[in-house]
Image 1: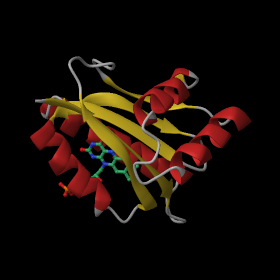
Image 2: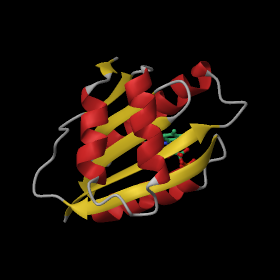
Image 3: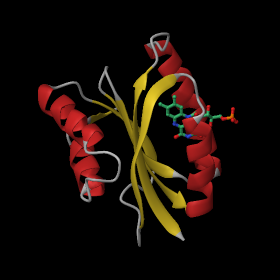
Length: 132
Ligand SMILES: Cc1cc2nc3c(=O)[nH]c(=O)nc-3n(C[C@H](O)[C@H](O)[C@H](O)COP(=O)(O)O)c2cc1C
């Protein structure tokens, strides 16, 4: 069954832009292999990721991401079955404007699972990001 899931995290103090590059390069390969698509957004302060794929693949991805020490305060924002993908490919975005940062803070503090509109809120934040 096709599933959608989103999480957000704070890069750990040792996490540099170069390390983000490492994460992205490997994640791109692994996601492609597992038919996982979506968007990863970096704001400088937070990372927001939304992914779509088979439920089993997303569960495995979540357990790897959740035990990754390169980031902190990892919050699973929500997951839901989805009939079709919003994001046919996995891509990276960047945005650091005040509106995106405020929306990200609001989404993170509504956790756990209290923002029933998490998917649409995440999608609208992603819309404001520039694709890289
Ligand atoms: C912010 C962040 C986002 C990540 N996103 C993905 C992702 O989309 N797909 C993925 O396979 N790994 C992603 N990773 C990497 C995983 O946490 C993990 O290191 C990787 O899947 C390899 O796991 P393994 O060493 O247990 O095989 C991400 C890591 C971080 C810090």
